[in-house]
Amino acid sequence: MAIKLSISLVVYQSDRKLLKETLQSLSQAVLFAQKKNQLEGCFLTVVDNDIDINNDEIEGFIRSYWLKEFQLLKPEKNLGYGVGHNLAITSRCESVHLVINPDIFIDKLAIINAIELMKIHSDVGLLTPYSQKTNGEKEYLCKEYPSLLVLLLRGFAPTWVKTLFNAKLSSYELRGMPETLNKDIVFTSGCFMFCRGSALKEIEGFNTDFFLYFEDFDLTLRLKKTWNILYAPSVKVTHHGGHAAKKGHKHIRLFLHSAWVFFNLHGWKLY
Image: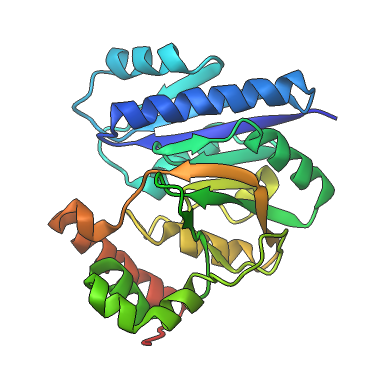
């Protein structure tokens, strides 16, 4: 039986070339799922946190590359990543809901494979994909509970220092995990979160204590209390994202603040 999909996309001064690729690949994957009668309808909500961009401009851009129904929400100020998605989720949340970044290229089969797996596994509240970087290397979205040391190493340490702690970083990123379906996931990054709508509503979406960073970790921990999280290697994406340290001092401050909030909420692990 075909189901309905809602999608939320939060943008803020996003690279237009990458956003174009996201919208185009998403459109292709949605159309393929509809042709195979797995998808009854699809609705996209774009939340634009950049108050300096004209509504008509961004709306015209979306319309050029997204082939289905959509709405543009424009808050009066930048609300942050999680709260932005909450606006979209509150406005429209179907039986399955995709939280996606504006720098993701989606495989043509990603949506249909995700839908089929969610139908089979009724105990799954969130599905996370196989992700690769633009150079073809695997990106490890599934992780174990982070320590302060691991986060500092990943975000700010030079390569030679990371090499000294390679075993600890490998363990954190679950690099030895087999490429098979896995429901033993506790933590996953939030660039592509294919969620059951009822699960999202149950936990009331993202925690508003986070402006940017760690809202995905917090969401998965809260969702894991009553639902399983599924790693699905048949759902494939390419992620153009980077670490906070590469984005300037503002992002570093946001990262450190969110880390402080996260550890205070869920417990400190130093190393």
